[in-house]
Structure formats: structure tokens, C-alpha cells
Length: 98
Image (cartoon, rainbow, N blue to C red; front, top):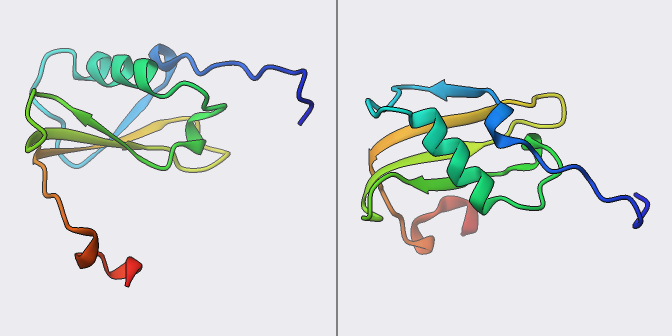
């Protein structure tokens, strides 16, 4: 990639959201997700580059979250999954890290 070329930023408000599982019963949930992504995910060239991002819907890190991710170069959609409660795991308990 030529260092002089500045990649275009993602217009998160034009990205389609694909929900996996239940969609939270919150007004404007798609706008909430898009706004969070626009504020926190600068520097991505395409949605498919997103490995994962956690969006906290309330002030608590233990309640209502959305996990968002991209699915590779050919998919420009943002994939999201809602969780009513966060289920945090110690790194010691993650099998892939053992």
C-alpha cells in the first residue's frame, strides 16, 4: 500500500447490521451500535477487518452488551450479537490460551 494514500474511513451510519440471535428491545439499537463504532473504531479500512468490539449498552460492564465483528474482505456488513449479561472469563480459563 502506498503510504501517501490515505484510506477512506468507514461510514458506520451506512453499514448494514446483521443480528445473530435476539435483537435487543431498545429503541434505535442500530443507531446506538453505529454511533459507538464511529466513535471507537477509527483506522479500520473496511468492516471485515474488525475482529470484535464490545459495546456496553448501560453504564455497567456486567449488563447488556453487544459484540460486533466483521467477516472478512468480501462482507461489508457489521455482525452483532446481543447479550443481556456479560459473562467475563479469566484468561486462565480460555482453552485457546493454554
